[in-house]
Image (cartoon, rainbow, N blue to C red; front, top):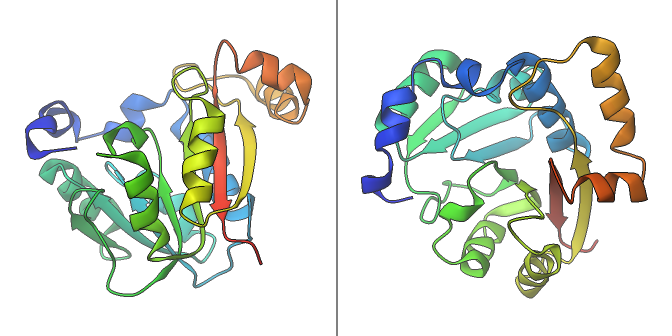
Length: 211
């Protein structure tokens, strides 16, 4: 994302997460569970860099697990909202996801709803892999990107261990608990889940180096 691209985010920074997700607590809790558990396990005191963090809606869920949180966003109003939300409990940086690098390596890097802001995807993966020790976690819309192409880019930069998990949490609809549980179970339904992904929802991807 370039500076010229932040306008729509600047205007929507206040209350971003609550506006974007019909049930933000449940949606972000499920996302955080997969950040921690998909691929190599994260443990308390591990640091997560959250690229294109918005107002740091994910921070509360990750901080609650004992992780350290570093948010990065190019929109200054989003950065201000993220700092207000985390209230000194996290680092928040104003920077382009293509250029940002932390002062020291981190355990994990996440990038949600923002992969298309990578100037060049393989170069972006290589840059992130250079400062990420355990894994890169991001969402992938298989109707927008071929999974095989993204996997090839990851492997080319040394992230050869790739785990995909369907993510069936609706963004715009708040489901009753029973319906949410059914969707959660459907994430593990193999062929049925893959069929569903042809029409809706996304994968969560965790990419890491071989042990």
